[in-house]
Amino acid sequence: MDAPETYIRSYIKTMPGYEPILPFEVVSDALGLPIEKIIKLDANENPYGPLPEVRQTLTELPFIHIYPDPESRVLRQAIADYHHLPVENILAGAGADELLDLLMRAFLEPGEAILNCPPTFGMYAFDAEVNRARVISVPRRSDFSLDVEAIARAIHRKRPKLAFIASPNNPDGSLIPEEVLNRLLSLPVMVILDEAYIEFAPPETSRMRAVLTHPNLVVLRTFSKWAGLAGLRVGYGVFPSWLIAHLWKIKQPYNVSVAASAAAVASLRHAGKLLEICQLLLAERERLFRALQSIPWLYPYPSQANFILCRVTGLPAQAVKQALAQAGILVRYFDKPGLQDHIRISVGKPEHTDALITELERIGAAEDLMD
Image (cartoon, rainbow, N blue to C red; front, side, top):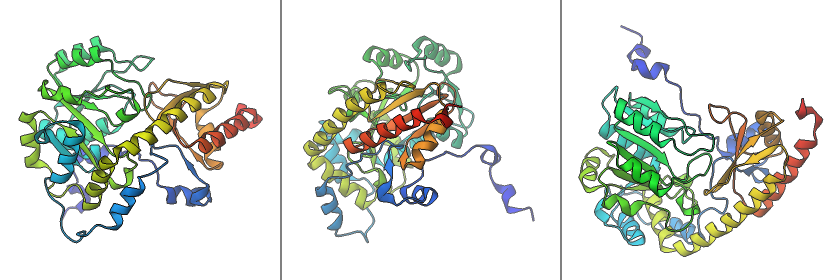
């Protein structure tokens, strides 16, 4: 018989894998540092973690031996009540990432296309490759704004079915202006608006309610960032009524775990406390931004998210990232089109900022990195 590996789909054999951020314990072993000595600013996680009320809820779960509700009714109703939206338009997922893949499986035949606007979240292109879709890339301008006219030309000429737009965008933290989104919604394409970081943007920035009046708009959200539930994987989307009926057919029946659902519901029940933590992070974001501006070889970009992207000048960005890692401070390094010599720094607690700036100043004074 043929070797079993020959049965693998041919396009999967050659596609690159996604490069995720390494977990604490792996980095701890690699650096030879205890976990408590590591400052993790590389994955945009909430450094304060979940609320005490959420931790208590998780200790009291009564039915973890029973499959979860396949429709996540309690969670979806809590989301609907919090956002004042119809529960019928809400679908929960194992993180927003699951919903990205679900949308592609619902819409895309092999060889059909999505529109992507890099630099942006890498999962859009990755999921497209997994689903055998083409990726039509319309790069952002040097200030990370969208080239709307180029997008319109690409949509009219190449007919992608889905356009993925993050707002705030990852990795730079910029928001899509309302008039730009309205222009995109006038085009013949489904617009998937990823609002994973919207809780760190100004109030009333979200466009979730627009889904109710725009049949070609989907808005995705997550509990990973503002609620500190990244490890539990729970997100949700607001979908037009005509679409959500089809998504119910193809989603995994028990996709949101009992623990993730209970933690998300408890988070919404105490959302006021979470918003207070968001305010702490916003204040620290401004302090971090000013501090990064004082480093002469860094250019930080203004951000409406819980991270700050920096262009590194005069020093090799990868060496900066490695030097920080040796000191137990983890940041994200980029070396791709539009992001050469960039690092992204998540907003941490005040003591994290202090340690980071001290180390950056030391790196700037180190002659070996200047070579």
